[in-house]
Image 1 (spheres, rainbow, N blue to C red):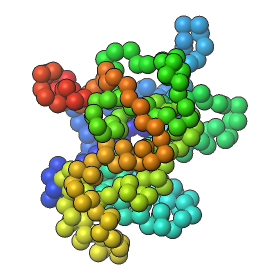
Image 2 (cartoon, rainbow, N blue to C red):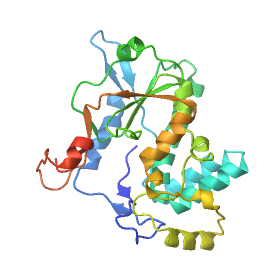
Image 3 (spheres, helix red, strand yellow):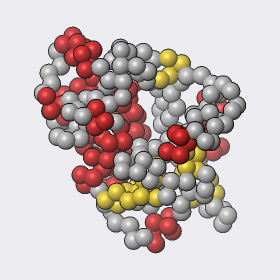
Image 4 (tube, rainbow, N blue to C red):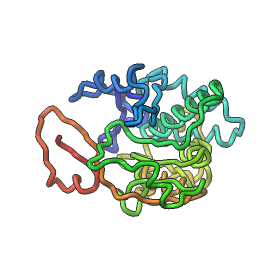
Length: 276
């Protein structure tokens, strides 16, 4: 789904609660056309639908609707330790938690769809951010069959080198998808920690005190970079999955008001199209 707001902190003095602001510089309404009923599936040249996507009930980041959705999913989790750790992430690192949660919420919808229709069976699952641009044709399922995929395989592109990018994943089995999207896996020991870019421990600690949220020293990232979403995802996936890599061949498109491209910008070569 698409959100018309974002709560990304720009500096480490930003309020850890997040300050949702409306996105600009792009007509997000047009992006939403991708998910209308007329575009529910794409046809293969033999006139058989080969890729189906579904519009998940949407909400804006930082909204009351997002908060209610989080309450729903957290209440469905019976393990109180897991629920308390999710609450810690939710209030201590709302930006990254919003991202993890949105993907788990989407996966919840897919599972409900499979359970209610029963006639719907998916051969594989693919996840991609809406702003992911493939600069070469994306791989077909034959590519993965050729490389003898197993149920524990999960394919990502190699843009982030040693880390696991959180922008695309090809998941050949239900097992791999469950592992990839699971919130429970996210808060297992050694997975997510509090830290990362523009993170201010002092402000977060004050918020925890207000909310009576208890933490242990191991809940905080000993090294700030361990809180990057790519590193968290890498730890989470490698616990039970075999992470395999595709040649990148893609970039994240982040439009701005000016229609100027800077393909020689250093970030371009690690997967960002900053000014296109």
